[in-house]
Amino acid sequence: MIPSLPSSGGAARSASASGLNPSPARPPAIRPDRISTEGGAALQAALARQPAIRPEVVERARALLADPGYPSPAIMKRIAAQIVDSPDLSEDAA
Image (cartoon, rainbow, N blue to C red; front, side):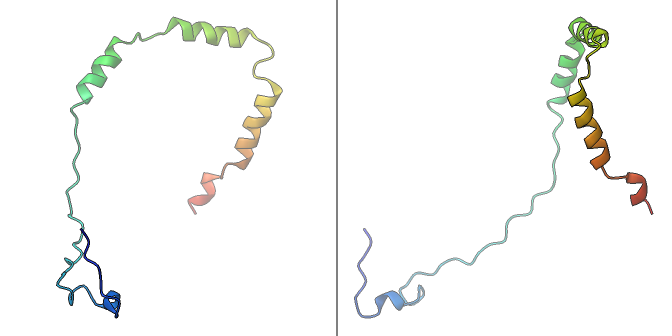
């Protein structure tokens, strides 16, 4: 239960005057950087189970190469705009 405060300026009393001493703010604990490689073996095992050549991806690539409408003019315009809008990294070296 929260005790009631007297109506004559009781709300203006400081925490130390009311017997409550708030603890000073502590700086956050500094923890050293850590890295874990526990999942590395599982990732390598999953990669080893994948075929080096995925036939469904090769077939899709062949179908796209045979399509005279691929890439579409809209895709080409979007790629061209991205190339034009990208920064020239050779100018940043100066």
